[in-house]
Image 1: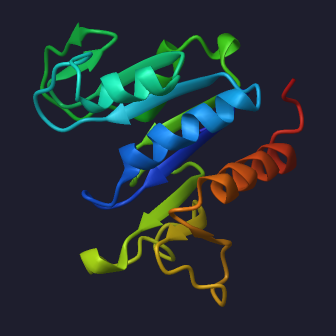
Image 2: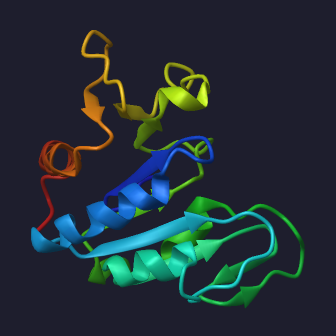
Length: 176
């Protein structure tokens, strides 16, 4: 997927803490002057903007645009006529990409775009990398500095924020 606005995903199995991490990361990126758009893949039925729900939490954390999608609904609230999984390449243009500096994506782990894999050893799930060549770093509760990818501490928001800034500077030099 080619866009002028950088797109970075966070891929992990359920229960890894994707939303919790993003809830802490978005304010740090906002403090650095980045305007964040957010796309979150939801499963099945969902309602948005209810206290305690992920979309509400991420919007309150500072995402300037919030788009949530599942097989039944999308919000910006659009009822789907046919029940099918949403496609990230169809969702991205729904954001006002001129008004944001970075799109963060939660989910869509099987779509080809740059992603940080999140991992918690206690869950006992397999790594998505190396089967997914789009993974650019692994953030884990037990970082492996011997691996071929950058190893980040999933609990160190500052180091993840710094990694994102380097990634943006290295791969998206045209940002303002």
